[in-house]
View 1: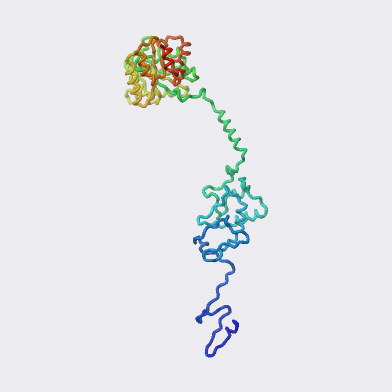
View 2 (view 1 turned 180 degrees about the horizontal axis):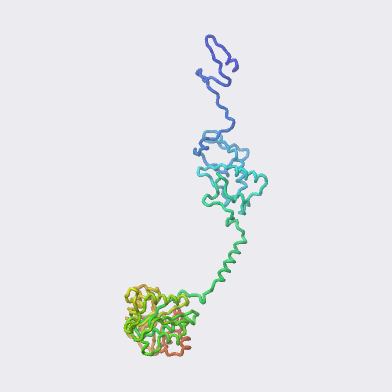
Amino acid sequence: MNADSLRTAAYPGVAVTPLPRGWRSGGHGLPAAPPARVPGPVADPLLAHGGGHHMPDVPAAAPRAGEPRAEDPRGERRAEDPRAGERRADERHAEVPRGERGAEDPRGERRAEDRRGEQRAEDRRAGEPPADPDGGEPHREDVGGPAEGVPSEDMSEPATDEPTPAAADPEATPQAEETTDVDKSSEAQPRRAADPLEWHGIVLVTGTDTEVGKTISTAAVAAAAQAAGLRVAVVKPGQTGTVTGAPTDAEVVTRLAGPDTVKTLAEYPEPLAPLAAAKVAELPPLELYAVVDAIRAEADKHDLVLVEGAGGLLVPMGVRPSGETWTFADLATTLGANVLVVARAGLGTLNHTALTLEALSRRGVPAKVILGAWPAEPELVHWANLSELVPHLVGALPAGAGSMDPGVFRRSAPGWLTPALHGVLDNWRVWAEEAG
């Protein structure tokens, strides 16, 4: 009995309503509608909306030709993207930096390409040359940026029309380096390379007392520095005692060393401390910041600026704008300069030198010591003082050096000073044997 006969059959005492074509009985007398016919495969609704827990599609793991595709957990075949073949063609021809595939969607899926992506795939299949797989410059259309809806290889940096460093012309780098070398060679070269152990810039010269040899020591350092090729300036902030008629400190330095520049900022008649001499003569005292500006102006034009003080470290030199007194120690801290302490070689020098060095150390000022006049016939006290001061010594001048011929003085000065002061004295034991 076929379906047509069942639909039209009549049973005694029972009225059977024929079912429409395609319908069947549900087993309880209720008709059941046939399943709806779908023209094509239906995409997984979870996939369409980003849900589900399926593993991401890895292009490298795509099934080969002739092999069945993997099925989802419900046993149904996954719906293929109608443009999947085109996307695979793009992956084969697109440039893959560092051997990696393009960026994937955060949910493990690639975003669908838009029409511009399809057009590029069709152009490539039509015969347009692909990008150089060895890192050459990509096509202009690819450099312009990703199509709408297509993820970029690097979402943090927009694509530009300029080639990447890896795709740059290999001959361009040597040319750039050569240009840099030319620029460096065109810069003004210093007159002499600075030794990090040598003292340059602004250096203040003070003493443990008056008449200890500050001026002669300043001239010796200036002569040695000029012999080493440095441009030297000597500044005397305040010269006192001009009424005596004796040569000024600037005149002595000029005669012995002949530096490039010698300048005295103020002169006072009486042989007193500068501030006291200004008050006695009723002359304007030295103003701290005016002195600082004058010294820094010379430092801009010279390699070494020697500033000779008056008397000892804490002698009153002048006044601040507030009217307070300033000392040579204040000048050192304001300028941030190193200080040379000229000391005697005889009895009493250890205490005076230690006090001066301690005062500078408490102010954070670096300092070294020069013996201003080493006697021609040293005694035990001189040798004992020398051994105590060696850790701080950077020079020792012979007694009577100021009366030398200027030519002899200039030729001899480097031998009295260590390399820190541009001299050649590098062994105190040898120097002591020769001096003794």
